[in-house]
Image (cartoon, rainbow, N blue to C red; front, side, top):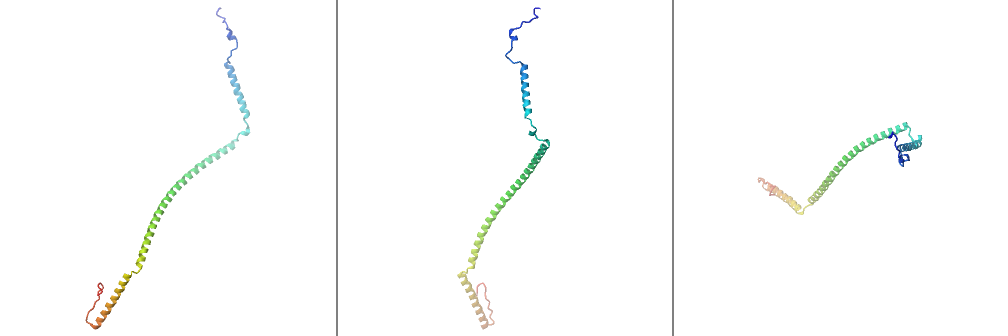
Length: 165
């Protein structure tokens, strides 16, 4: 039995400078247990919210979110209405400006026509003289015709409107 005994080297019998795997695992588990104990100690009943209150808050949050969605839809609809009304206002303002330009043009035309009417209402001295002379000539011719009819009853006398003769 020569080979039955193994000779031990001196290095194997002495303690190793390296930590064994078992010691590391135990140390890791010890740290985990300490952390678990710490967090368990930090747990407090007053830091938690009772389930009915939690469910009520969740329900209120959901209702508020639905209300927000509804209000956003209303805002979008109102913004669309506002945009269409702004377009309508801009169109109306353009129409107003166009009509104001037309009014200004018509006012100028009215002013010109009034001035022309005033000029027409003023009696032109030459026209007044011609009108009075035409009336006087007509009167003279009628008087002459009447005298001729008296003196010569058989004579036919006709006054001409075009030539005043």
